[in-house]
Image 1 (tube, rainbow, N blue to C red):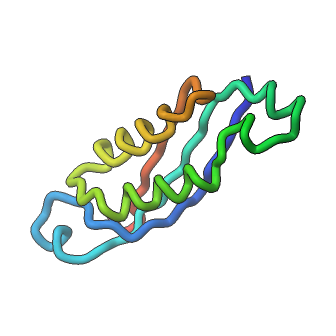
Image 2 (cartoon, rainbow, N blue to C red):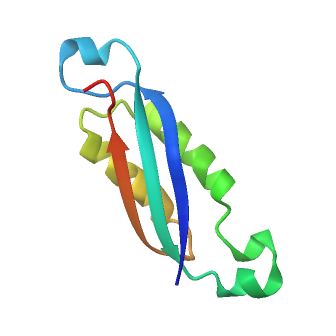
Length: 101
């Protein structure tokens, strides 16, 4: 098993339960650690044989920007779900920090 990290993705989002948090975007910082079987990619050196982490990063940012979740836990779950859609990803750990909290 190999590990892929996506670190410090800072995304402006609507998140929080208080009324003032529902009006303005605030930054969250997303970190993702994925365990994946990358043996084929190591052998072939082809993007098709690995996790396209740039594409995944773009999907994570889009998901966060449009999510409007109330809880960080919910956003983390949604990000984890996106990562687990990748066929080579076996497990994922997601952290979401709200620096202004």
